[in-house]
Amino acid sequence: MNTLRELAPLLVPIVLGIMILSAAYRLWRYHHHPRRILSEGLSCATLIGIMGLVGLVDSSLSWAVWLLALALLSGIAVASWRASSTAPPAEQTKKQARLLSPPGVAGLIGEAMFYALLLALALLGG
Image 1 (cartoon, rainbow, N blue to C red):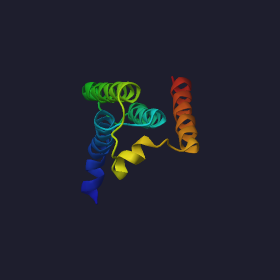
Image 2 (tube, rainbow, N blue to C red; image 1 turned 180 degrees about the horizontal axis):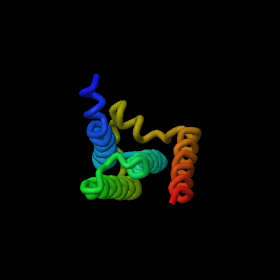
Image 3 (cartoon, one colour; image 1 turned 135 degrees about the horizontal axis):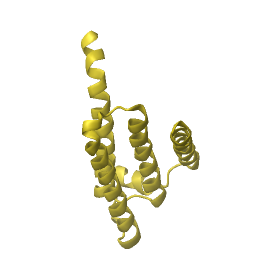
Image 4 (spheres, helix red, strand yellow; image 1 turned 60 degrees about the vertical axis):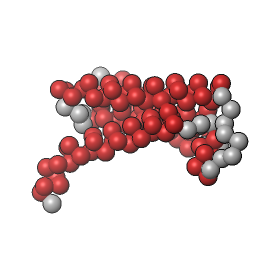
């Protein structure tokens, strides 16, 4: 148990980084509904903000957070371009159909409120 406590400061940023990179990969790889692109972007931006506010990443590795943000922004750019200029595949798998369906409005509002709360904490905290 002590080993897990000692490794937790290293494991948490790695797990969050993998989550952000997998979302960026999905944005690069598959067609998405425009609101789903927004939802993925807000979720990952919130995770990056939490990583910065809590100080999960050492200052000597701050470049890694910027690389995560760059990967996320490039994924959003590619997914937005794909949504606006190319047609989705005619025969869709279950995963593709789920990604092309719009996300729930309640989930999107919840993400936006959580992001706004995080932004307010960052601004008030200095």
